[in-house]
Image 1 (cartoon, rainbow, N blue to C red):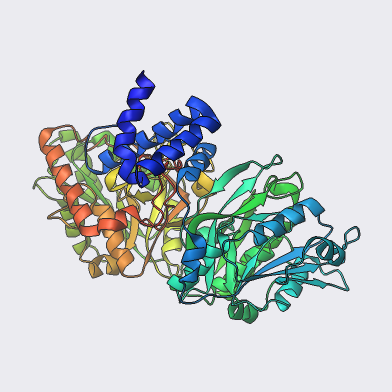
Image 2 (tube, rainbow, N blue to C red; image 1 turned 180 degrees about the vertical axis):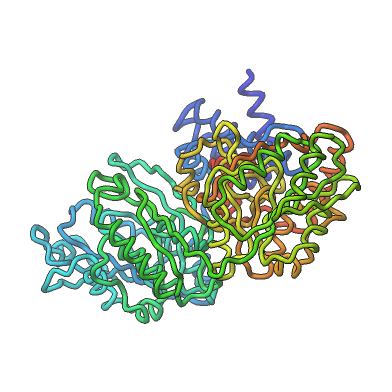
Length: 631
């Protein structure tokens, strides 16, 4: 009876969402016959989740969406009516020829057949498949194609000399005539809508010269798994790992100018290629399609299942990355860390001056721990500590501040006005002469010697305007791994509560990368940049979100905010200021939320550093039952 009541209630709300009574009922009847009551319950659960999401966005008190696993997500995706791909493609102003390049060597015939069929099954039909065989010893590509396929869009070339995957790929590229070229491995699959969305991107983004998509994997039983929902173009993340991978599409003239794949980088030839492309592309020429368009087959000998299956690939990738940095005139060293790379940027010389600004009121023990940890552990030398005393009345703290004031390298600014974080920061910056400003909460404790050296080295990189650190709770769980826009309506901390040492989602907790924002609890920026955007908003964002707002203003200048996992500090959060636990605080907080929503609007729901298929209700990179693709 409860299930029937739920069905009636949820279906009545969902009729308009699903496109009418007949369409909705036919879908649910099909599921009932196919999957029984369990299937119906799953779909009802999904519609409840969507309803909860809507309530969350409208500031009601019902529960937020629930995390789901990938198989459930795939089931729910099947529920969504598919577009008329053929009809939509017929309306494209431009119908580009797309070449799919597929190098083969001793291919498994059935796997290769499935790969070819995934191309033949495309909803977009203006393509050519360019196959190149690298002198297979137990496989005749020409005979295989002749016997199984009659489609004239399939082109083949048989190499006379084995050249490994790089030169073999170039042979396939040589016979390609398409405007764009996509790469397909001999045992992988394209989704049936892959080329449609590539063609759509070419039409909608005429400046695009490089296009990439999300991807997943196929286990040995053919089950889809391990989705990789990627961020938009993220250069510093690319320096940590080849997050691009599949599906990648290059303009043919771009690929020709790069000379295709380079011999000697086998196993990492795709990483080397995208690194070289990044050197000549502008960010607006790179487009990410947040849809899974590629299925990467897992088997024991593939890096999709075992990253150490091809150790030579990691070595080649490290060399490709080191050479990219050299060509880009970036002084840095690279070392491999299991499946990713750690780039250590050379510190700028001479060392720029840094003012570490710490606001405080009382809290002697916290402040003492913070100051002493800075002096004990910080290797970087060219800094001063500027403490803003916001009306301290605790004798012990006052005595400590007086003692600090007598020491070289310390300054105290006294401000007896009511607490306004943004105003305190603005006033302090005005009194600094340093090139760099580091905002640091008084409940921060330094635990890594290189924290400031790392942050200074990163901010010295091209177009970097802000650097944030990895912050831990006292129990060594993650407090801050970067900021994700849209979580909770405005912003939340990435990977919050994950254990320290966890790789995070697709290795993002161990990778330096760009985020839209970082917390002001530990934030490094240039004084000149701070002044260009007129600092923090002390009128409308006195307490909360002033750091997020600052980061977004800096982004509008075309500068990047980079989070680094190689600067690690404790953040004993909320011990100094407390929680939003009074009516006046909650009213002020609500007003600040509305300020952010009015000021930044849809940008809060479209974070380029976060995939729209991931949840905005949690900070754990869980899959969202109802994504925001196309919003």
